[in-house]
Length: 461
Image (cartoon, rainbow, N blue to C red; front, side, top):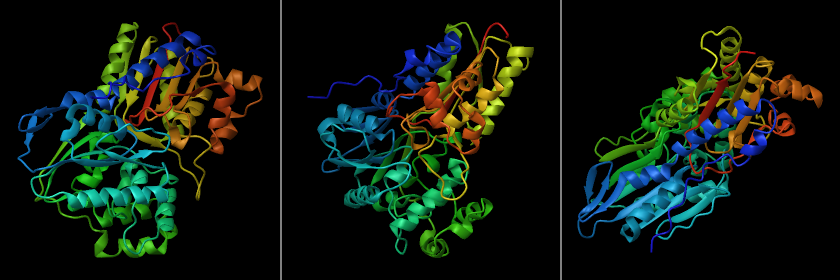
């Protein structure tokens, strides 16, 4: 019997608490609009709509993939939004699935019958990430001509399924992840490097699957929905080793890269395989554009004029927070560039925080830092703004992000908080925690990266 279909797990669990302070009505509007955006991120519902079982095989996004007698169906995946997709595939396809392996983030609980699940860590890989990646390789190698592999790799798979190439130690590969995450570079460039220091990324897992067919079901977590930045183990890589080395040099970390990785990048093994002979199809189940469309509708229903600022959000978190806050302040006070009564929206891509050296990954996240940066500019304005990661873990913390409004700095002063110092030291979580302004969603089971909502009150301050 099929498992009961779960409702979307994406919700703001402390909604009422967040709306009980500051500019309460504007906060509630911002948070409830964001909640609608989170619901639109649900990959499970999108997968159930896209996939169906037919007498002759499987139909995915309107395309039938025939499976003759003896041809098998496998499911492989890893990522923060992979579990709901895997659950949906089991609900729809049942025992037609001949086997599978998915790697999930620690804290997730899987109830899968036909697909094996492994737990690893994010944002930095652990030994469990290596073990899970080996299981992916093992099953991929079992696929033969005529078989069909449904791949559900989503954001976070680089840490969750992390297998160093020959000659590179696990410690050196983890150090590379630390350098990349602390550099402030956009996720597209982070992935450009990681694809060339792996035995599964950059299309290498697909090479193990060949000559079987691949259909990718994924959720976009990068600006522009570029396939080999979203589900890169199972599609053709479009970057080169030269691109990877250039990124490391451009961001000034080439000299800090471990010697084993430098040697690897200078060897032919770092080049990605040619997959041109393979049959590979990719379906984007959820994108930032779709999420923004849902928030636009909700904003209109609340009597606001929505403005979608971007669906390719990337940059330094504090600067993005300040930029959006500057527009909102000017609009609130002077009616330019937008009238009061406007909601500024965005979803997609990923903000970053630049940390000197190794850095710390537990003191805050890009969404929290953007909220703090916005707070000082919005002082005294009838504006509420929130910044969050749709996966529910902003910067690897247990919070999805932060909310602020025109009274945040006043409230911070009353309890002796130094928001400027928190920004300088990249410790945004503690002051937001003391203010009660951290957004709590728990693990959402989705990942369309960063989302922001800024509500400009209908009456200027």
